[in-house]
Length: 433
Ligand SMILES: Cc1ncc(COP(=O)(O)O)c(C=O)c1O
Image 1: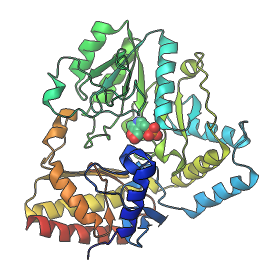
Image 2: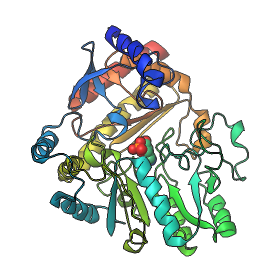
Image 3: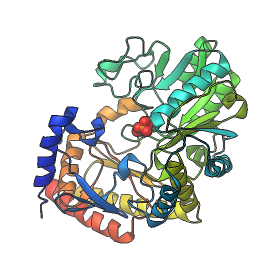
């Protein structure tokens, strides 16, 4: 069976006349794809394209769709709010309920604030850190992505290992033409998962450093988990040197535990940014943290901040994922997939690393163990992955179009897993037998 996607191709060729690259986000079409498939509708773990092809989805809309597509309870909550009005630029009672709930759920949250995207949340956290500490520099890590804004998009995706220079020398690059030449002036970039380098840098520059920002699990590359003790040591070092610790939980938030990575690893940062899964697919983001920091004089504006539609969606999402057993079930489904892939790897003698963490799982070809930092990403066999991706897409399994990181939702079932593994089995046979 091979999918026919003529209508998607036609729509994309038309879109090229209207939008640069034919898409609204550079990530909606992967570089290697001639055109993306156009979504028509989604239900649960599946979506259908404009040519009527059905796909089991593991892209999770880049993370937000933790309840799957068009979840009835979430729909009802949003419909109810539509009847009352979608936006007033005034506070609503529901916002107090949401704020109270976030403070109950997120370990570091004594107060919260709202934005619409993860990029904005991180911009606010940079401002809070500078306002609170009176210092300017921020440490971030190679390969961590914190959003597309000038000061955030530094050293996210270096092109080659060689271009990165030696590990022990702070190094940085801009991501895009058009970024200010000064975008990286106040950013110090370090390799991740290396406490010695972090310690040396902090001891040398502590009087200038306002904050360290990190993805607590490095999900914006081929995924990498923190080495045992790394986050704890980072916490201690920052606290001892009057530097704030910011966890960017835009991916991990609500996905690997209700309280995010800080609950999962038992390490409490000073500030957190969250977005994506927060409202099951609606555009709302936030920051949370210590009261004295949130109260340090920063008052971010934003026309759509905490608009009632997204607040209703967030409240409903949190209500649903707070139910007992949610995260065990997500973990069970993810484990079934990764066990199945690892069995196939053994059967066909394929070198790969397949792992999971609650609702996120990973498949990287060409390596057979966990990576340590972004530099290890260059060991991954991306060509084999892209070939695998295309063959799966053509058989109704939608993986991530660019890298081996996948999401499952509360809508994924054992039947989906069986179907997915059956497709994987065919593709392994075709590629590796
Ligand atoms: C860890 C992380 N931080 C920040 C962002 C930016 O979020 P947004 O795309 O909502 O601006 C992303 C987006 O993928 C992300 O993965």
